[in-house]
Amino acid sequence: MRNMSDDHTHVQEFFTARAADWDSRFPDDGPAFAAAVAVLGLRQGDRVLDAGCGTGRALPPLRAAVGPSGVVLGADLTPAMLEAAVRAGRGAHGQLLLADVAALPLRPESLDAVFASGLIAHLPDPAENLRELARVVRRGGMLALFHPIGRAALAARQGRQITPGDLRAEPNLRSLLAGSGWRMTSYVDEDDRFLALAVRDS
Ligand SMILES: C[S@@+](CC[C@H](N)C(=O)[O-])C[C@H]1O[C@@H](n2cnc3c(N)ncnc32)[C@H](O)[C@@H]1O
Image 1 (spheres, rainbow, N blue to C red):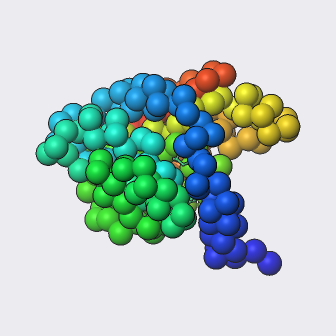
Image 2: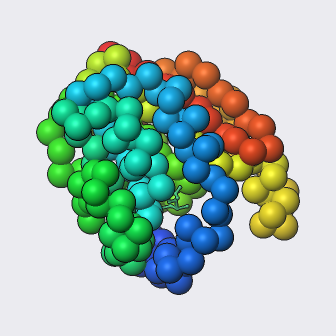
């Protein structure tokens, strides 16, 4: 029987093996991250979390968006990814937390937005985990679910087909978000970008 800690161990093993060369495998993603952060509409002084931050590739554009008076947090479950983030100097752009997005060490409604790149497919209980992200964001705050590659291109790269039950298919994601405290406001799935935006609902 699988339990939550089996899921965590699997995620940590998977990403520990990939941490050291994560950034060098995807050297051209920077502009896509910057463009995705831009659509969040963050303002100077805002408080934002990069959920499943990995090596912290989103932290520099997030810091640029909220400025020195803002708060940037990066949370990840895999110590090796956070260590790679530190080596890459990303700790200068935000505070890194070893934390599970299922149980964030943050107060309710303490953030203006959450950015999550490549995270959702790795969550053992996406509905529950998206609800936890909603807990820490104020009403009207934003969520960006991003990936610097579209679903079809990613499936092709991994040698698999997209099935209708795919979590990130538009109708599935819309209803998943709606059941977790979020209202999806836009959805883009192109070869070089997946980006779904949602607003924290009442
Ligand atoms: C595909 S990587 C993406 C990393 C980074 N966001 C990027 O786009 O480069 C997914 C990351 O999510 C983290 N992760 C998976 N499940 C998590 C959870 N429950 N809580 C926190 N981080 C998690 C993994 O450790 C990994 O670093």
